[in-house]
Image (cartoon, rainbow, N blue to C red; front, side, top):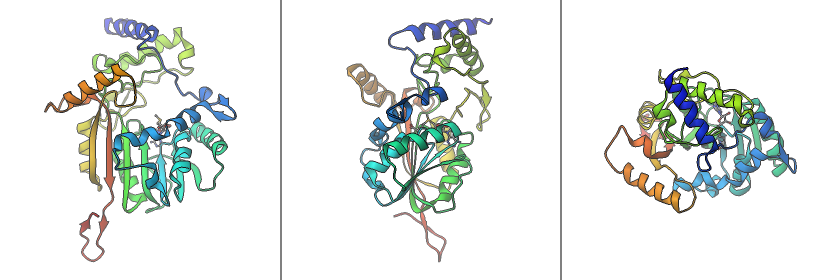
Length: 318
Ligand SMILES: C[S@@+](CC[C@H](N)C(=O)[O-])C[C@H]1O[C@@H](n2cnc3c(N)ncnc32)[C@H](O)[C@@H]1O
């Protein structure tokens, strides 16, 4: 066993037992199948945090903006937020799109128990190849998904194709070098692990701990992989940093209305969280391009498909 593997395993084991950095529930298929009143715990939790998506958009998007619109929830998980958007936003239609068959079936069953409304539907598919005709939606939203997709540029192209002219894509996701963006929370929320250890070392360490503590997660962590950015990254992630995202947007057909880095600990919380958030917010103001992600909790963006004038082919925003 290499020294770095020994250190990573010990650190993660310590973190998993620590009160502050302990493990969080992982939404495996068996976890999501646990129900309360016929509704999956996973769906219920997503539903209860339905308003969370709008917080960082600071008034540029509220759930009421969905009224009368055709909305796509790209990477809808267990459908809890999708049904929240339906009930609170009253869209003309809302479609949850998921790559996972298991999650789609949980979404179909559980979200329908919260509201059995024909305006809501769920589809299985890839963000990289959306199973919808062009100009199908007025709004696409995507929460905590862009860090997972295999090929982000293809996903943006597909969002552009399926949006109507003047439509907008709203996305929120953590940059790869965000403090806790390693997504090893099912063992420990200890930050910066992926800054110190290579993806393959972290995978090996995580699997060693899962052997000792199988209750953390009933499926092993798969091997690290090379992402669309041609870098080795942790499994299930694509490694997109803020700089990468700007590059991806600039090559996409979208007009970027807003792209912001949110400070780490941007969500609701107590005094300690506020201190960390304010410190990170301050750090993000400094002109250090290579260190920005480490103070960031999420990237938020509003991308618009411009209306093209048919006569001249000129793009015009409105
Ligand atoms: C962290 S979950 C977020 C779920 C939900 N948006 C929420 O905020 O509760 C990320 C979801 O994206 C889905 N996903 C990952 N890659 C995808 C892809 N290429 N196309 C569509 N969905 C994808 C995953 O299956 C997973 O359910």
